[in-house]
Length: 278
Ligand SMILES: [Zn+2]
Image (cartoon, rainbow, N blue to C red; front, top):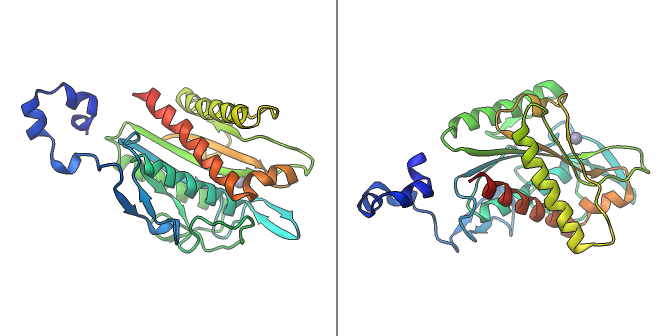
């Protein structure tokens, strides 16, 4: 794989460049359209914007899913299920990363929920794991299943240096607690901390630009008890999008525009993370 690394390719003599790189490894042109059914009607076609994330691999895990809805909140008499909002933001993030030519795996998948334009998302239980397997009922089995999938895929991609696992959740706290988007990493991984910090700084910058009066308190912290941080091989950042009980926090993921903004901002952070890794 290192032979395809652009920096190395450019140092090769022209002849080698002509014969050493097959047509298949040439990046697709911006404007190329690819189809991904997982994004649903009207969203399946992804137009390649640029190749900035070529040679980057992302694993996107929406928290919970299947028999486990995760935390539940309520708004206007409707039940809010954590897994649905984490999934929708995750899909939007995956789609943005693909626009920049990343390789993206959506690990928890709902075959009939694409990216949804409704503000309140129906709770369902038909999510499955990458490869089509059912999500187990027991919590530990559930976490082991997604961890094994990610670790297996990451071994398969071992020649690709830049790999990131993004895990998305919505927190549940007292109704009165507001909480900004915040980030966890494992304490043994200074590298994960760096990625989490880039994401946190990007969000901070975005809020400063779009809502300068607001202030942003989102933190980066180590949390070693979380299975998904302890047992996964790629560099992992665990993101909490807000408190599902708090009416003001709810707007962050109830609003379609806000869900998209979160995905866009996280994409910008990951573009920066990738740029710095080069
Ligand atoms: Zn959760």
